[in-house]
Image (cartoon, rainbow, N blue to C red; front, side):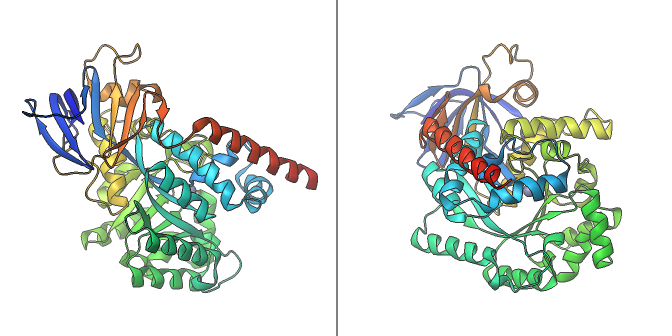
Length: 438
Ligand SMILES: [Zn+2]
């Protein structure tokens, strides 16, 4: 594939115009000002288009599309205990397969090429990821509230084993295994420690929800006598690569701890999830503080039950706007920084260095915007148009590993009408069961 005379975001996330970008197999083979001589393959006109690295969604629960709009308006605890948990208890691997496919469709259609996920019913998620062709780092969320089993005695261990079994059978898979400690408040020390030992033994990255709400943060301090982040640090979690979601209520002492650890080479990502944080009224992340701490920063949608969509472009837009608003600084989180966090930042969170930049030799994991649209003319500033004016309708194509998985509204690796029908069937079935009980 040769993109002819296309505009693109370079390694500094600055717009370069009218380049020839050649894709060969799964890689970006060449970027030049002149057409490569003797090129024989497929050509695509870059007129009015902008090519950039595809988004890497660093925090998601992809099958939760099945719960979109279910139990709206309830306070967090009632929503979880009366709606979410009873619904989730009914889910099978087959349900999670269809829910995941629906979520992956939304991700692809919004320019996302990779995601990190924490959920359960992993066999269904694995099947959906493999069929769709998207990249994913998958983990089974480990929680054991009110108990303290070894990690090896949890459902999360069983889910992790299923994932390892799959990867032994399919060593070329684009899935990468991770572990996930759901949160400080849903587990105790022994479970956390044995999970950490498992991660160390197998060199796995660990996802954790940290200080998402004020209530959770303050109760954690009472329970442990220290902040949730300090609790994790004292258990030894900073010795493995960490992906920490939300982190809204981190204190200055937490940021100082992160700064010290990152200064010594700790591999820590903090993930900003603005839609979910706004919708659940959790608060605002302090990205300026995160930057000063020197952590890697990424952006994530969280699940569709609290977002309520998996539109990564919308999330990236919101991340920029929210941070400008709370810092009162219009120059903060412009396109260069925001797009870097949403692409390279997400890939670094996943431990992937071969994606996230438009550069020769990198993987062809990319998105192309069509900016010839009433909402995106004139083209004074293509990057600003992509970030602030464009919507999902401007995503022209999404390419993963050199393959076009989505183009001009069409999915090439999934049957979207069938997926919609199955998700509607599953949602109606679960609701009928739950209503029958009530
Ligand atoms: Zn989450």
